[in-house]
Amino acid sequence: MKIWNGYSTEHSARLVMIGRFEEEKDAKTAKKMIDELTEQAQKDHDEGHIVFGNHGDRYSDEMLKKLSELNIGSVGYSELEQLLYDVSLKQEGKELRIDTDEIDVSVFMKILVLEGAKVEVFSGHNYDE
Image 1 (cartoon, rainbow, N blue to C red):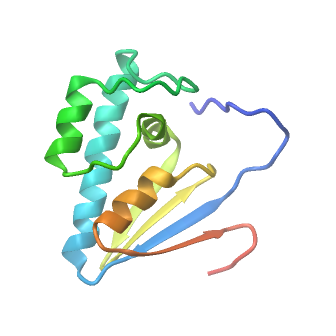
Image 2: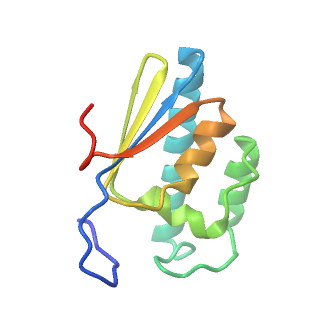
């Protein structure tokens, strides 16, 4: 179940983000990184380390270890909850596609860029593919 935390009557973003990589292995690596961080974020949420709307600065030891293993130093604590949003990841060939109704997606963009992607972001409401 998805719980909406909002302060207005805005509709969903229906955001599409596509990372295009030079090699398929890079797209697979980016997806794996997102999957691993999402798994750790879920564990942290279950243990009370990540609380929606609480933008503190205390990473769990396990999250710090995971970020270090993945060589990611640019993800802020407040961005970790983005990993828990309802997001669809689909990797095909050299592309990794992210679909979500959320507008806060910086954690995904950072990972795509760190892995060398050219990133396109657009509203699925306004643009057909």
